[in-house]
Image: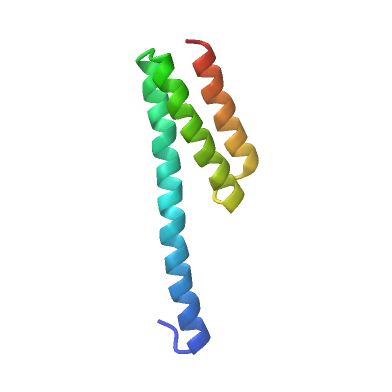
Length: 86
């Protein structure tokens, strides 16, 4: 644990940001898994609904810098490709 006041503050803010980033990343991954689950059950209506949510979460994570924008675009593209194959 740091002794300097500013370093103590940095530790607190880092922990808070890490917690927030973890929740955003986790919800993003969960949304992607829901889309893949809907695709695997051949349910195109549900897949379209959850894809919109997953796409939004991917974009938000990319905007916050948690995921590279190209990685988010790649994931969205692959999900859309799987959905179109239904």
